[in-house]
Length: 270
Image (cartoon, rainbow, N blue to C red; front, side):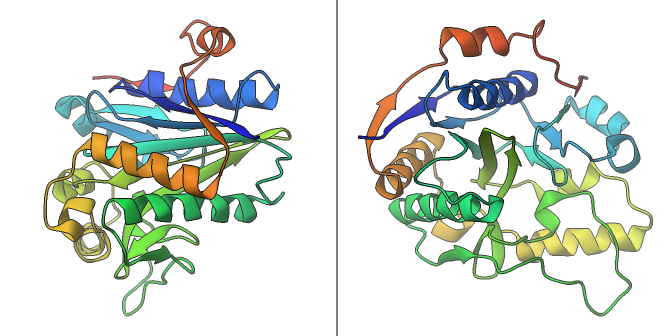
């Protein structure tokens, strides 16, 4: 029977969260740990930027510093995301694996199915996979540094609005997919952390956040706790990826790998 590990972490700083995800990916690739679902949160608001994103050009670093918002680079691509009122999931498995197709999109679909099943457990029945990024129409096109300002292929949307943003990193022997399940969202704060070419672009980005982003609390019409989301996601993953799910912790190899002295994580602190 296939064995899977689930780790439920308490709130941690951005440096630790990203280092742990990287360590699990490295050890899964070397066969020294089980395929792992990790559920976690953040001890303070943290902005993660994609591995290739130019944060000096697109992020208002001075404002982040003034507000005490940490900036950390993710191992995955994409644009910046503010982690605050959410549950973050990361799922890591070796390549190849019998439960996952060999392609990025194939693995993405399997993880997305598990997320959808988990969302059903908490009462979100209208969620679906987005067919692709929605083009901007009507005015000149613009680039936004915000992950939430677009709905990309196979991300999870409800009523045409983004609920879960995800990104994947693949090595030759393993993949990591992680993302954010929004519980609440301070849209004005998020939009204020970025640099825009014009005030019109900033306004357009705010319009997208107001109309094309939805949270669990907004959809359900009630407050939701992280514990409830943890439980729902565990049920969703265990339903799609059947086998023996073990509640675990980082092993000794992972603990060594994710210590600050042995694993470099780019970080800007207030």
